[in-house]
Length: 121
Image (cartoon, rainbow, N blue to C red; front, side, top):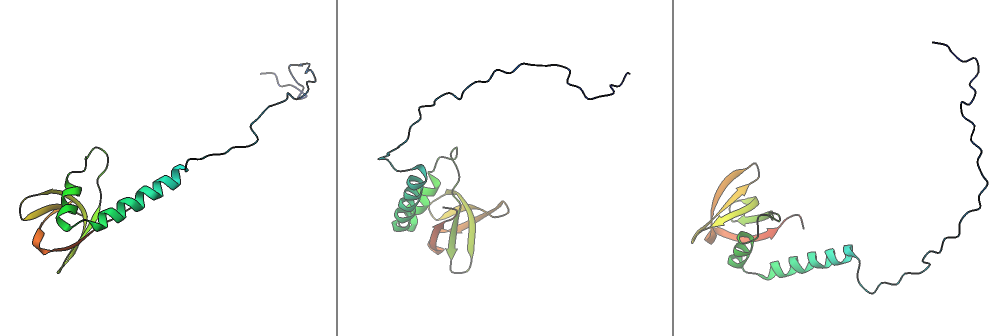
């Protein structure tokens, strides 16, 4: 292969001198609606306050009836002896079945539950 002695340009292009075009852009913006971040934080606060006001039985029903396609709510379930972290899968008349951290299935009696708190909100 033949090597060039100089690094000369291989193609010469004549560039015309153009002036910059005028751009007519918006200078002001006024929004009456809230931003998405503000709405998300309001929704989060509303969910937390309304969930806190529910009874334990209502909280269990709420978590069990959530559509699983959207997301699964992690919660903290406290009994006198132990605290469980995970997702409530199902319930029957006297107990709930929960997936505890580490994918361990745990059955907890509803009468033993002292409190339920949402995690990750």
